[in-house]
Length: 124
Image (cartoon, rainbow, N blue to C red):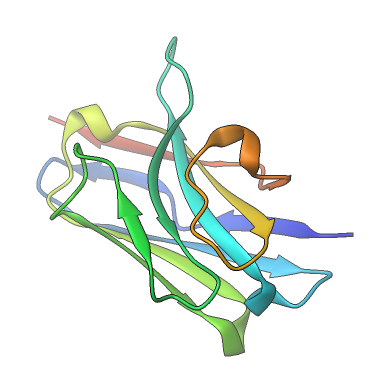
């Protein structure tokens, strides 16, 4: 059984930074493409960033490109989302997701495994 556990969320002022971590257990982490989604209150869940199994391909939503960086450390079974220059509109619950396979996954319904989410709040 695959389990994902996020950490690193919190309250930060606008312009600040946070780094989210997602540890996967139960399977070989290197076999999975990963994604970081976010959901603001009353809004649909949206993909912020994704990374392929090898790390060679990445995707960023327009709203975060240039400010967020997704990465992975297969030796530590961990994916990261470095978030810089945070804005109040980045506030929401951030979820990591995993899907077994080699390509870059970017659609919500492509991911079979999800974490419980971690809250990110950016104050103005």
